[in-house]
Length: 213
Image 1 (cartoon, rainbow, N blue to C red):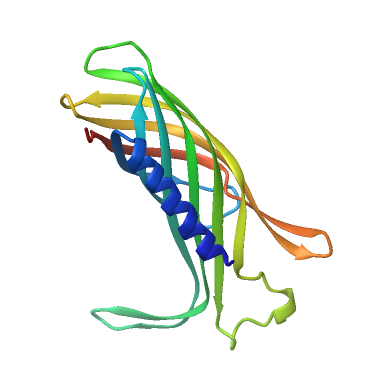
Image 2: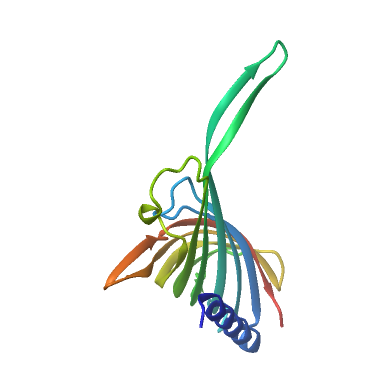
């Protein structure tokens, strides 16, 4: 079974479990800078479902998605006139990193404050990462066998975080927080060799939480 089919099956199971037992829906956006990805970080979109045990404790499953693209270019020509300056750029290569972590854990809202309440969370999960490369063959002279390979990486991970929840009403709240995502994804290179991709890093984000029923 391919990685894509496994991913679809896992996501379907996570969503089904959330619908069956969940009473809350959370969605958000954040920024993550994985330690193994050069060229800056990327946006992390999140969607989760869970169930509140009481006013303090909520069990939650969450799916995140990041798609970071990076382009290496070179300037081949520059022309200046009395009114404008134009430059010609040539793409040397492009690469993208897609990251799909699935986590489950507990969010604990501390009994402090009234409208704004702090929270802490801990999660365990599994991450999938896909790295793809596109080369300009007329410029990229490194032999094919020595180039980084496109492909899927995977591995177990964890997450610890803290933040604040701003109550908007009986059934809604805004959240903002920071967390550390610990996840090293790997792929087999054969002959007992493995290639690691470190997707660990800080996440800063905000979101909204809605009670469904």
